[in-house]
Length: 216
Image (cartoon, rainbow, N blue to C red; front, side, top):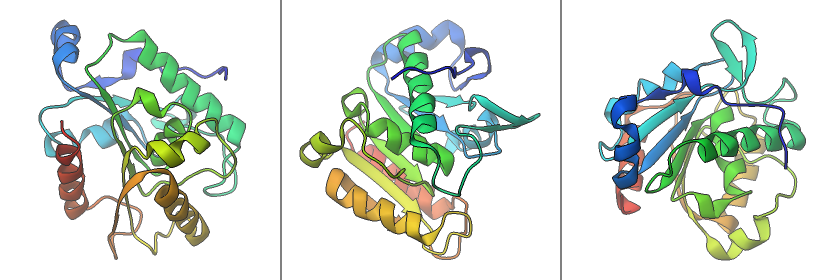
């Protein structure tokens, strides 16, 4: 898997200063945040104070610029059905960035919408690289990925939260995601009626319980 995309390290937003980062990452788990389509790295980073304090947090900017301050992981296409090759390229950019930083004690992923799709696509390529996965209003991309068969045995921990009536993610994609995760992960699934395509405080509290319960 190769990629012409790249994560810009100069715009990654970190919860710890650069001077302390290498040392902190040797003893603290890393939580990587990936925003949705049309957003930017500061969006999910605003949630950092509400996430478990033991994590070093890094919020990434997606590599495709749609407009100033607006970025995407995949090119435009049918909602919740991006090109599998485009998703592969974006995940490879994530892996390349992770390879470029000092090795962390462990790495977990949290993504919203397209970022949630990125989280699950990374799971399907290299589950062994990560400790836990959080998918918020995201989706599994149709198609076969390299680790799909092994995931039926490995069953890594995944939190998946959404509004069943999400106005952005089609119902078919929500159902596809729930079915796939049930057979390929140790799934914690929660529904939040009425939140639409967003993240609620209740959901964040559940995410905290999930991450703390995963042993961090």
